[in-house]
Length: 148
Image (tube, rainbow, N blue to C red; front, side, top):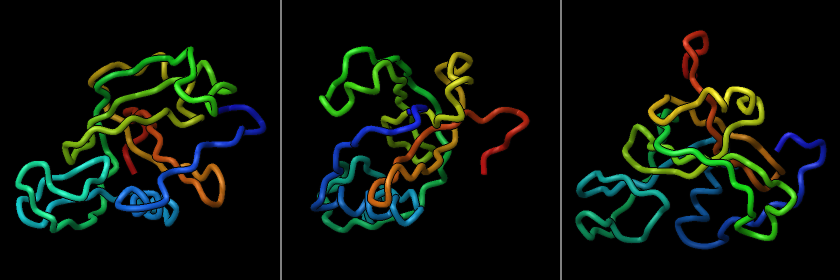
């Protein structure tokens, strides 16, 4: 992701709850789906609550803080669109709301990635790749840099 010209990115889902998630990101907000009945969070977005079966959902602002649960360097692209990006780093983080998200480190964080370990705290920052695509990326929280 540190190249001068970023290759074309796959287009996010254009319908349903996933489209709402991507629209919030484009607007500069990280929002998560939450059940209005039992208050369970869901990510990725789903039409029915996995805990209680309710169809009553709402979107709430996320705290943008998370814990690293896993990290890896991807050497074989999982999609043809990522062929020009390998190798790249991928993280699984658990947001403070309790849901998991697969993400990448911010380009600025790449030099710090070698120091990042499972259990470390990160903040989720929004990176506008194009006018139509904003990605939630992870940035390590260092003692000198509190989460924003």
